Amino acid sequence: MTRKTKTTAVAKRSKAASTKSKTPRKAKVTRTTKAPESAVEATVAATPANTNAALLARREAAVPRGVASAAPIFAARAENAELWDVEGNRYVDFAGGIAVLNTGHRHPDVVAAAKAQEDLYTHTSFQVVPYEPYVALAEKLNALAPGDFDKKTLLVTTGAEAVENAVKIARAHTGRPGIIAFSGGYHGRTLMTLGLTGKVAPYKKDVGPFPADIFRAPFPDARTGVTATDALNALETLFLTDADPSRVAAIILEPVLGEGGYHPVPVEMWAALRAICDKHGILLISDEIQAGFGRTGTWFAIEHSGVTPDLITVAKSMAGGYPIAGVIGRADVMDALEPGGLGGTYGGNPVACAAALSAIEAIENEGLLARSTALGESFRARFAEIGARTAPYRMWDIRGLGAMLAVEFVTDFDTATPDAAFTKSVISHALKRGLILLACGMHGNAVRIMVPLTASDAIIEEGLAIFEAALADAIAAEMQIAAE
View 1 (cartoon, rainbow, N blue to C red):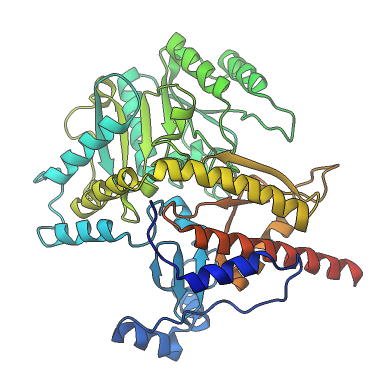
View 2: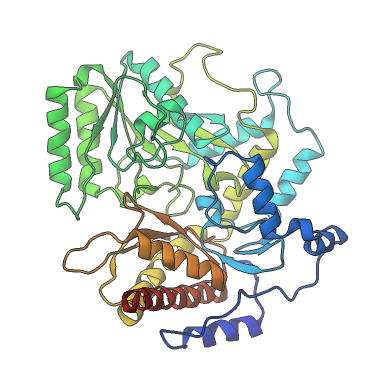
């Protein structure tokens, strides 16, 4: 089920770490004891110009500040759920390249498939000379996607490109311009996808105006008391006030909000949206870019609802780290555009296609769907224990589907005021101790879990022990500030 990555000694150290008090002694980042695997690696580790600080200075001089990096470290190598920086520091990776590495860093079968394809050809452009890996991947995705109807798949390069093309296809098929998205949704950083994205900072600030005929409906929010029924009623009101349903091509929604805080769409809401779309001739798009390929315990997160969408956008963990994305949909819908209306120079790169086929096979052969479900159950229980033991009344919510989980921090349970500063402190202390985490949520006060599904139990345990220690560090730092 999982790849072996840890020795018995490391597992024992992990177990010992989990039994420490809730305010453990601050420890240095664990360093690798493994000798450099090559002369190149040894040179990189020993070169003063390649320290994290030196590289950060070069980055700031050469890369626009708009390209943010969550961690001030630079990768040297990685394996499954572990990463080493250029100074030799070792980290447990609970971020997975933003949910890209369900099959882990450098899965051996995925890397082997990519290398084998590189020995044949790396690019022809499918629009010039097509190739079998593109067709094979399209066939595989058509078979995996829910729905008892003929399907076709378009392959592109990025998630935003997939969403852009889903909108194009929906408009061409329906002859309508309107698209409805939801508050908190994230669909990309191009102008069209930013128009769909329902979160201003940092994505939409200063870059408007955005395309017309995009409408927004509220997403259910327990914090503000907005229920699924409220959200659906608001959608019906939107039809009366701004978005004539006869001019709406599609409704797009993430099954689990990504940047919006890992909130799952209520099952009853999916069913109601399907009925609304059927009533008005609107297409339903499930944006599975972050939630797909086993992250939630099913191939696609919408499968938990039993609802079948018309189009599905995919990317991230589809190829185990290689850049590829796509749109899967009903064959009659996907055929809406004339030849030449879809495509892109690099879309469905043959190396990435080979990697994707291998990553999908790994998910199947290694039982990673079941692994995701089991991890989700384990994480929920452990986070509840850790929160109650180490930070009472601060961990307000634990939510998600399968191993796509988030924990949300607040100042206190009485007001449930979002605490982004505390969340940032937890993430910072975790990095110092050797754990990579990322935040999410409209207020930036949730930590999301995107650990590779191939991570060993020992690595998971080690990461959780570090998380609890970092949580205790953040509490201690907060108390010290309050005392000063």
